[in-house]
Length: 310
Image (tube, rainbow, N blue to C red; front, top):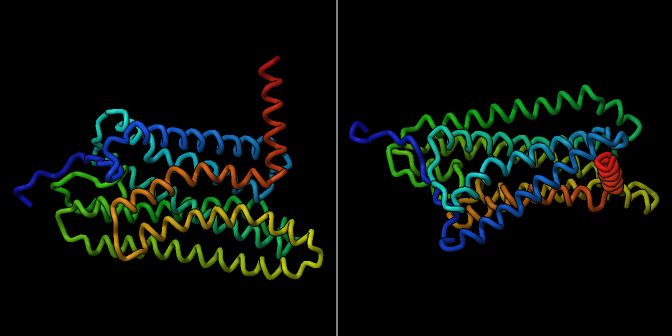
């Protein structure tokens, strides 16, 4: 260790086996990043401006839109810069910040999906007590708890990874700093950090998934007891968007962190799906089959056009 100089910056190598595709990748990343920003800002606009959407379900959807704006912003801007020929280097502190915010936002989203599943459970299984169960105070406590829990989760992971010495090499085999690629560069034993990170991510993901599964099991049982087919269809339609988002969220998590073998190319592709593509799909998932959101958006846009015309 005394013969090595500590690393002060890292080199982001990008997606493996994509040399010569920089311009195509730039267009791809820029397109999905802009779709993510515009789509989630529109959802946020609808939930803020429409009094009909001032309910717990849309309160949590607004929170999800905020995190879907910030989540791809952790990695996309830096990657698009070096795809245009800018420097691929990222400072030691910048790498630590990327890792922290990636896991903070990702864990918050995981908790938020769990809270949204509980909200649907309360609405469908206990409709008469729904407003009492999901009152504004409870919604605020649940939201703050997701932020605080995620902050602790991300802080522990970032501390474990960056308390290790890094003295070279400094080439990060991905388009942003994440635990598996950064740990491989440490010049010390990484077994503790690796075990704790896998356990931490695994426990959080598994616990949230089991809670979501429990909520939806109870929801399905309650829906099947509804006598009218129209009532069953309406109940299922309120849950289908959330369930689709949950499946899209947990798939990449399992493939990246919980599978035994690792492939740098597959990991990068799954990260692109998780970081770039999924956040742009949520506005479509939640608006295409939701008449309330579409109506609120239409009203907000018409009002905006009229205001600008005046």
